[in-house]
Image 1 (tube, rainbow, N blue to C red):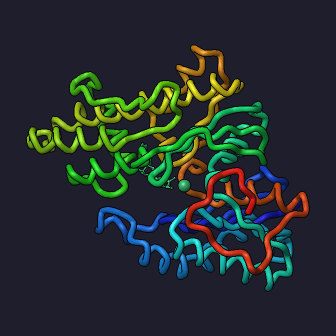
Image 2 (image 1 turned 180 degrees about the vertical axis):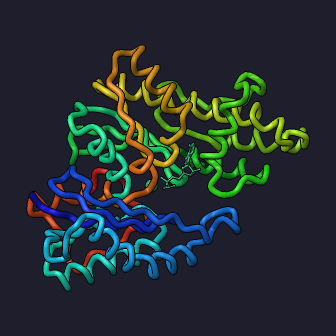
Length: 337
Ligand code: KG4
Ligand code: ZN
């Protein structure tokens, strides 16, 4: 049973994990960088520097948590892209260094395929083909998963990611970055029918998303009704805004599953922690006879266990990257370049 170390540095989480036998997570350590909160968004240069100073202690901590020494490591899996180029470079350089020092192979992993495979960690027997909605601060994509190594993009956002829209509107009312979890909490106490926000469905049967319209509508509403930023008004406002986003996400996920003859639907990415999204997806899946899976929160937000899980499949099959491998800031799923 191979023991793989995963390394994730694509955005503002520095993460190291140890996964044995492709699915047994022995360590999953995530450091969420706090330096960005004061700027209301991720500052790429600061994120790269944080990765640089945090990786080594996290690697040591991960081995300790897994109860292994570096001699027991069989391979390294690292996020190669998509992501912030400076951040990716730090992880890739570190992985190459480990690979040379420990004399084990390393492999570059697609971050989005990692998100999709986080459902294998939660539900190893989840059936194929299924459609996964990967929804985070940087991505909103529908991916058809034919096997744990075959992925196809069915649709994606044409502008903002869903998490980005939540974070930006949260910032306008003074919520700290990232605002998704706070919005989820506030919305639980509100009435989603208070404000009618638009739902962008695009062309008939389109599996793409657009969230810039609802984001602008929410920003304009706040401008016209400045009292909304008062604590007593926020629950209704966010319940309405969150429902507009979740309705479209769930509708398109189910549509994608039906159009592509899937047996199930799954969630992944930071926004997959959202309680309304989980609840509505489960309900819609039950109503349409589809299986449903969503990973626990520690596998939803950026983590290295999912990167190790994806890389383990390649390494176990004898495929690995060379030292010439470069990080790639944009990289669609399904292309092993
Ligand atoms: O996957 P992730 O950790 O990083 C990216 O690749 O972006 O996702 C972070 C995103 C942020 O936009 C954050 O606001 C959102 O996930 N998020 C949530 C919740 N928890 C985190 N959004 C809605 N509801 C939540 N409970
Ligand atoms: Zn991510």
